[in-house]
Length: 418
Image (cartoon, rainbow, N blue to C red; front, side):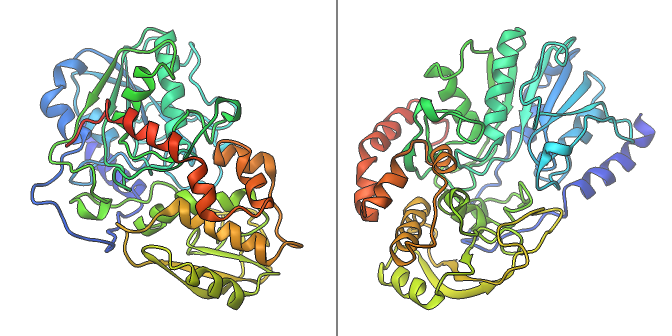
């Protein structure tokens, strides 16, 4: 296997989709950040020795030098990398929809790769047979409905049931520690919203894993080890780190998109396009029946913090790696483009609410909400009713502020970084 190692590294670099750096708020921290992966073999190698390991990962599992975690695990012969489990979008992160991804073994001496998206979202006992340790190492986005954290939780449940310890290799929350949006109600739990946390929860995956166990959101709970980062500031955006940006999924193409995502993904619960099917997804809003000038004027009059809106027109198309059947495919849409002017001041969920409010107000005969879909994203069925009743964005935000304040107090018990 060692003679194939250089070839394996090359393959893993290709899988990484050519890491790209964002220029948004690009002020690197004074000391280089070391992720959990960077520190694993340096400080935790004894925990790996002699173990048969299942690795939950995808293309985003790179160390500071851009080397894949898979390559690093295969190079260290003190343990066995027995299986790889991949989340939505697949091991390579190139699939708009992972439903069709089959379980497989690949070339280059990789172990079996098993998809945890589609029919089997939680490892079953047979999949975990002979495994001594489960390691999770995926770059998160920081939004509740981003399914990688649902996968993490389901893996932790399966690990507890099989009495297998779990290790989380911590990585930055690209959005820092800011918290926004309502807390999900248990009644509306789904794969795109599995736990009672806000839309933007302001924790790293390691901190979130500790909260899920500490607050008994996962029962039974596995034995958990979080490999903390070094030199990480929790209020930092990803662009302020020294780490390479790798788009975590096909439509989160850069950091600005990730920052906009918690609010704009709410459009998935409506008949309005959020730009999927274009090469600037999620940072735009449109439909064939929208009057761009009217919408832009109303939104800019709101003087929302850290953002401006400009008129836009676009035609969604089928892009195999991004959107296979986008809304309004091959139809010209009109609407707005979103440009962040100050990420520290920008409030993603508040911006999403404001856009929904004005779409409903300006185009009541055309704008529609899928109540079930929106409830899964929002975490309750309150938002459609509030919009129908004409509640202002401020009134909507105020309606969940107390539960958000409670979560902010709760999460402080689990923070790992000062």
